[in-house]
Amino acid sequence: MNSSTLINPVAQSRRKGILDFLRGVALLGILLVNMAFFSTPIFSLLSMEAALWDDLPNRLTRGVTWFFLEGKFYPMFSLLFGTGFYFYLQKGGETIGRVLAIWRMRLLYLLIFGLLHALLLWYGDILVAYSLTGFALAWFARSSDKTVLVSAVLFLLFPLVAITALVGIMQLAMHVPGVSEEITASTEAQEQQIEFFTQKALATYSTGSYGEIFRMRLMEYSQAVFQLVFLIPPLLALFLTGFYLARKKVFHDLEKGLKVLKKLFLWALPVALIMNIMYVWFMMQSGGMSDFFNWSFAVVFAGIMIGGPAMAMVYIYVLALIYHKGVCKPLTSMIAKTGRMAFTNYLTQTIICTTIFYAYGLGLYGQVNYWQGMLLALVIFAVQVVWSHYWLHYFRFGPLEWLWRSLTYKQIQPLKRPKESS
Image 1 (cartoon, rainbow, N blue to C red):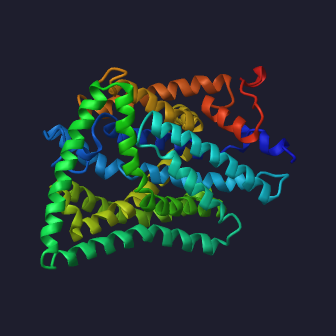
Image 2: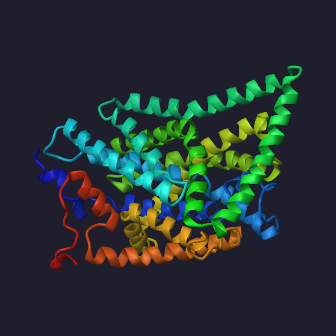
């Protein structure tokens, strides 16, 4: 295989700075959302009823998180993943079949990284889902624009239809004599189990040994794996949307691309506002597992599944406009460098946060409330922005990007920058 194109890194002149900037901002948003999942039991985040802190500052923090952050930045990052796939296919000197073979090898190593991340560090890993969905994305490399766009819509609708059907079945079952009592009893048992696991998580992560934490994490991750059936279809929809936008050259010439993004913004903004208001209302009012069998949950699930990507499109337009206008250019440039090291910075966030919250580190699990966690996230990201800036002054890739690339191409990649370009 001619490796001259596939092995060499993308030249700086070919990189799309706007994409790196968007990745950097998405990393910040993801950290702000993930902070509560790092520091508190997952079941305590399902509603304000289950929240560990219910005072006004923390209620406001959760409300802001649900409206502006949760479910908004992973769609942004997913769109960028699909866009990156398009640019990956543009590597010259090779057939598309060979490029896709390298792409699949790249995803295989991403899957390994993801499994190690999930099992050894944190159950909330997204890399496994990205790698599995990336394999599906490769099937559309040669598809027409129409096929890509229609498939994106269908994959987005799949979990919405599935959840609506499940809620409908539960609602019908509630009217069957004898069955409704069983459902109620089952719901009460689940709520007791949730309370048990919440308390167990608080004790294990704050005071347990690494072995105990590992077993707790394994149990949590085994539950998360079952959610992949609902996560992968919308992820693929977002990947395909990003792939489609890149095909339409939206990010090639940003001045022209902003016209397309503005049209999307005008459509997305009212949808985002309406859907996210519905989502926040449900989360604030939800009182337990029984609420997840009501029609209101199906409506709110639609709210986050549609409102999240819609808000992501709003953010993409606003951020692209800021980048194009050169507003705060030194800062946007540094954030873009953080985005260039997205893989390293994502995993580094886990290492930092688990060290702060888990017993093998500072053991602060369950002791940092929601607004304090947000401030901590901002501090961590600020450190990442600074260190990414200085790292890329001397090196061509982030350390984990370099390792990933070297494994993919079965050849050690040059890491240090030539002195004349530093």
